[in-house]
Image 1 (cartoon, one colour):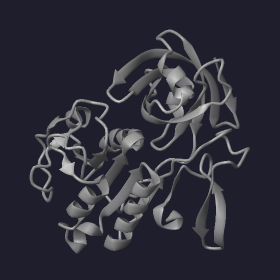
Image 2 (cartoon, rainbow, N blue to C red):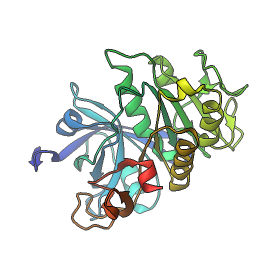
Image 3 (cartoon, rainbow, N blue to C red):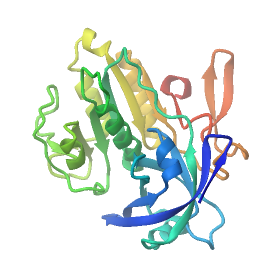
Image 4 (tube, one colour):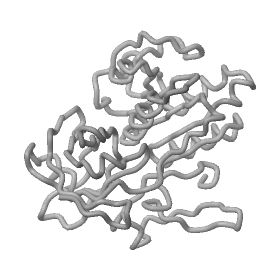
Length: 291
């Protein structure tokens, strides 16, 4: 069952197709949600009812969407009773979903060197964006995806076979799914995982950007999602190297559709500072307007 709201959002009873569990209480949830899948864009999210006994919904970023097959994938980590209840739901059950919500990422064709930076549960939008960018009919470059985590990644990393000039020596771990798509990826962690860059993912991005020429930097655009300190560091990289950067913000949300204004952030505009709602005015913003 699906009902349109304002021509963009859909209230949908989505059937759970599968729940895949990973280390550190991480899960990938596949939902049969055809209305949402048909309209999802990289950077958009859904508001999910975790359990009938829990009134408040939870906002979860969309990691993948297949419009033809009618499914969406959501990656989440258990934090609190709501997501713990969601992790206990079984295939065949239904959950109420509102989505897709929010303004997505907007790649600019004049900046074909796309660098996607994801940290922790900020990884899903980067996978969605990478999948969308790899499908572009006219492309000069495949995107470069950099991911960081201080807990085990929600996939089994493996050494990459795709060469990335300028990568620090020994940084060879990648995400297998992206490798199958022929999209280059590299991983960063301070937890000592094999093949990963020893440091924050933004530090890895900085080391790679430092190897580029001025002409190459003129073609770069950054996209980032993750914890606020990571996004602030991505904005600093954008300033240092003179490249544009779009960030997807993470904020606590109540209604998720712009009514309660509980997720507002201060954004610099041409007319001065303004308070913007992350759920509907974002979650994607120009990094330099927020940080």
